Length: 113
Length: 114
Image: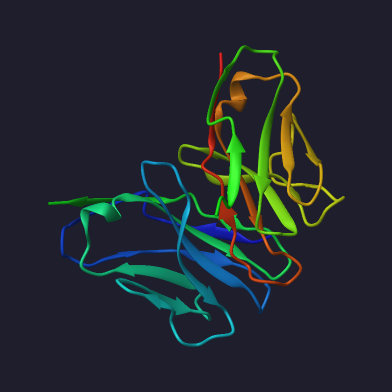
């Protein structure tokens, strides 16, 4: 069974600074996908970024980037130039091509002025 | 573009009452899912449907039933609600079948069982 571990229940950062959220996973599969979802107070689940395991290049989406270390089974999210609107719960998630999404327990990120 | 629509958004039930959470998607997705979210637990899979006509248990199926009514709709039923089922419930869908892996979520249902 796949597992996803987020070891930081809470993180805080000041506006304009950079923060990194950690995620590790465990799987015996070779082909899979990794995701970071954001859940603001509105409760909506928003896809932030996606990484395919077969791609060596780390995914980036504007201020969001990942550090994907396949051998270490690590998938961290870096948020640059943090904004107040980044305050949210962030979930790391994993799936294979035909499986369902498995989520970590989440990291609550608070961005302060 | 509605995406995934869940109803209701909020519900309060008494212990022992039954209810059905409705979910519909307009993206022609094959796969649909029901998750529950509890503090400190992340999202846990209750049931999923890989395609129309099939359903499978997830991590926490006890106390729930599902129906994949057609390709668009996937409902979750609580036959006899218990306080332990107080949670936020999310429906999601994805292409499935090896297609794009992204899951799209509804806005969630906050259910309180008293």
